[in-house]
Image 1 (cartoon, rainbow, N blue to C red):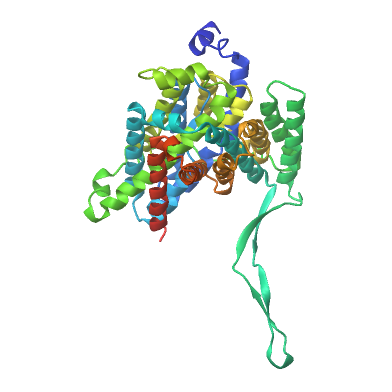
Image 2 (cartoon, rainbow, N blue to C red; image 1 turned 90 degrees about the vertical axis):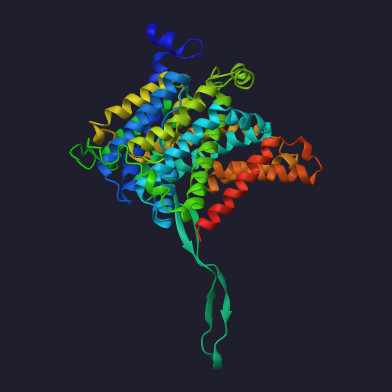
Length: 475
């Protein structure tokens, strides 16, 4: 215990061993789905799923340990959802790169992230973000996490609709023809006939009550109790015999990067560069958004740390170290054989459970490592049990909205776009990009262009270029 206190400075950060371990377990359970989803996603490219399974776990373990031991902050890392979809459906399917070439792109993206971190570019970007947008990012991530929770809980259904436009009269009194508009997909509240949705609703009530009563470890207790209740309901399946995911030889994915093939065709050079740019921009701003949204409100990155970040040299502040830990994760994951490894927004669940130091991350990493041998145990926890935790954490993060001057439209407009588009577009970086663009346009329209930090102009231009590139890639 004394070693842990000295290593992670628990008392200084207002926490203890028990709280950190509970927080680490909470984070793990909310993001453990990735060890099953990532192999299935990347396996569609032809990658061996068993090898990707091991690579996913090892990438999460190594990257999360670096975050915990080097930066001493409670963030977990793993191959990111969204980035693995871009890897599979855009880079490999739409653009016809092999998965080995795609891994090479991911590795280069990681090197770029390391360079922009070591050269203080990431630090400068954070410094340039106005306070109102920082508050919006915090609240927006809360909305985003809650939306993930509502979807995972099965509280929402998505139905196709063809809007009614009118009736064209028929000839000679014959029945008219009904004209409908183009189909669209809209969300709606379910009727809770599904048992998974019923279980998630029970879990949400349990967790909320525990939070109201200020019970320590409320979120983790909620996950475990909901899992147990799900057994007689038939939602929690106690099948430990599954061999779908086992420790496998990763030699087919380990160091399988194909640099020579990636740059062999000079006619594709521009396409390669723009794809790497898209990888890097999304990765960078997802991480910045997560740190700003969860770290400042909880005091993980306090005023003293912020001063060290902007005034100190080298990696002295926790934010500096956390950014560097995140930057190294992507390249490590690529070498092992997986798509971009990044800081998980689900870390907010562990932070909401009281996690404040790297001991939380170390706990999460150890639980991921256990999954190399006991994968079926992690698979027992249903989404209906972890979804309530994400909804509750989203609520906890909404407080930063109260600091935005909503009566001032100049401030409200970019803040609103930042916050809501994270959920609507299902992407942290998309919300940030919309907010940046709106903020710059507002200042220019008001004749206050000089008030905008030069880096904001540069980043906004990069976002616009990225939108254009993605539009061209999708043609």
